[in-house]
Image 1 (tube, rainbow, N blue to C red):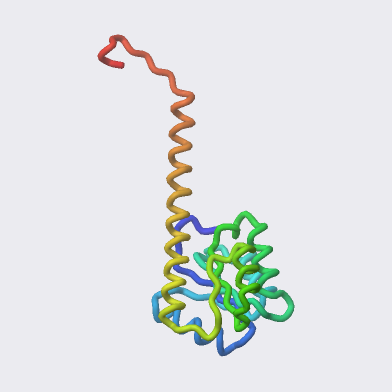
Image 2 (cartoon, one colour):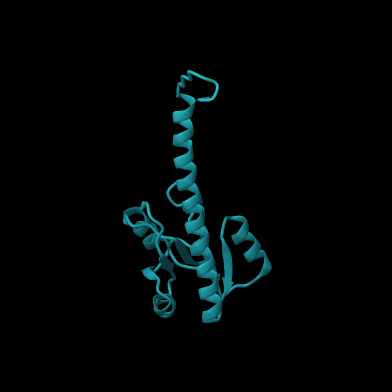
Length: 162
């Protein structure tokens, strides 16, 4: 996985037109996009991509491996656990939305959705991912400092030096 926060989005949808329009909207907004035509292709990309993704836009209903199966695999894998996943579907039943959010989706978009809504949600997810990565880096840095302090030995000659 990459060590720096990126503006890369993985778009997973079995409809070529959806992949094209989503890629176009996101590219116009300054995001780098990678597309996959189903869940299995997405999982292959995730396994071999070394640059990492800051957000995944995931269709719920697809052949071979659907969005819920991909989401479950993501949430079980330490490298992908914290990538925000925006589920998208044409089926907006409340139970489906609840199920997706309970499974760990960051947000749930119902198709058709407006470009501005898509961009606002993706921007929030990417920002969330970047902030989380920055916090992880800070915690790692402070943990290292603390480890050094725990093992430090100090000698003072006077009370003022202390």
